[in-house]
Length: 56
Image (cartoon, rainbow, N blue to C red; front, side, top):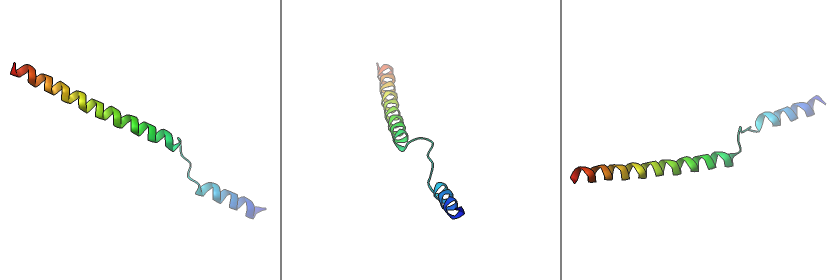
């Protein structure tokens, strides 16, 4: 009986436990990438508008 319980405990120790499902992490990373690209695009537009305003 001890052999089975020690084997059972060993299996539980060896299996990784994730706090969140992997798909949630992938979705969060995709969201952050999109937000970062959008911010970079808006920063470029703002800089171009500032340069255009100075030249006029």
